[in-house]
Image (cartoon, rainbow over all chains, first blue to last red; front, top):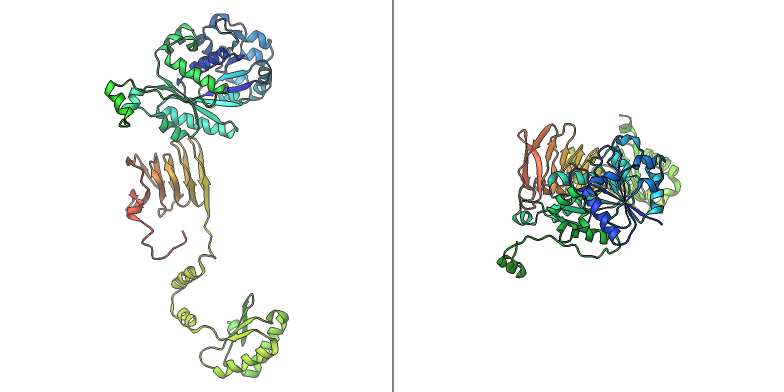
Amino acid sequence: MDGKIIVVTSGKGGVGKTTATASIGAALALEGKRVVVVDMDIGLRNLDVVMGLENRIVFNVVDAVKSKCQLKQAAIRDRRVENLFLIPASQSDNKDVLTPEEMIIFSEQLRSEFDFILMDCPAGIERGFENSVAAADEALVICTPEVSAVRDADRVIGLLYARSITPKLVVNRIVPEMVARGDMLSHLDMVDVLSIELIGLVEMDDQVVVATNTGIPLALQKGSKAGEAFRRIAMRLNGHEDLPIQVPEAQGGFFKKIRNKLGLGR
Amino acid sequence: MDQEKTPVRLKGVGKNLCIIVDPMESTEHLIQEITRLLSELSEQVIDSAVTIDVGEGHDDLFAALGSYIREAFGVSSIARPDKRIKIAKRSILPEERMRIRDMEQSWHHYSTDVLMLAGRVRSGQRVAAERHLIIMGDVNPGAEVMAGGDVVILGSLMGTAIAGQPDNEENIVFALDFRPTQIQIGSFVAAGLPSSSEKIAEFAHVENGTIVVDNYLDVNPFGRLPWPQVR
């Protein structure tokens, strides 16, 4: 097997990298691919909670990289989603225990075992970021419609280009009503500044909080707008590149819909 | 000066030779000198266009030297220097002469140091140029562009632009879409510049000790210069 390593990054913290990693990972596994999600946020372990696998951790990514255990022992199988695995972060170390060189060697092992390897990159652009992108083939940059997130994403995009990785953009937590009022950056403005390929637009969804707290993958929840958006992103990653990007729209009144149909909107 | 005393001087570019002679000297002596100088050049002289400068008047001297050189060295043409240029050159100041040269010779003599880049300057990146800086692309928020001379952005300027480093206040910062975070020109700093809603070409310059932003096409700062200057 010759897997693809995709790093999920953002620069800024709290924009939804971990949620996106878990959701896209689960969606890819539901597509029938063998997927592993790797929590690279060493010292601040989160992904296991989001995926509801926190009570099954025995070994972690540091053990696996340092060959203290087998890859199979560190990779926890998700019981609800077939072919989905998690390699959790270590909670007791810090990011300096791993080096980019070690990660490149470890990545070869991962590529031979899985179709998709999703790296959940920590916030920031220091060692944790270096380790996460060291062996990456592709990158997803998660960005919320905020000026601060856009600036950090821009920085990260520059760093990814410097490493010959062409990133794709996921705009997370869009509130269509606010965009329509002009109170929120539209994804068009963001693409304008960041000038990279857009791979998905994710609407703000209360279900995310529920999913994160209960550990039930978003992709399994029917009727979740965010879950649906992440599923579509997964499909695009899985070869359906021409799948059209759905722009979240405000639930306007009856007359507004008619205006839009007539081309009088905005 | 030594050169003044030499009866015959030779200037030449390619196939054009200019012989400047002192009309006070005897014709024989001049011919002797010309023969000596031209013999050294030997074959290069053949077919060249020769200008003989004998000064004002002295028509007979020009005729004598001209016919001698044509016969002895087989040059293609003999002429006197163009009087108009000669007179004009005498009466004008060095600066005006430079202008004439600029207009006539279209800046062959000059080159300006410009760092010209195409692409997007992203947050955290810093571009610095010794002299002028031209960016065909956008400058994102959090990016910094710096120049010893002018900064010209053919796109959106949303980051920080620093011109005229370290102390040149004559320089400008120009952008087709002018929305900078901060502008510095020389030792002046301007932040929180009001940005216009639509995209208009604007530029920042120093006026009476502060940085002023104006509509470039309305003010047309360099359009008033009567002739092109090297920046």
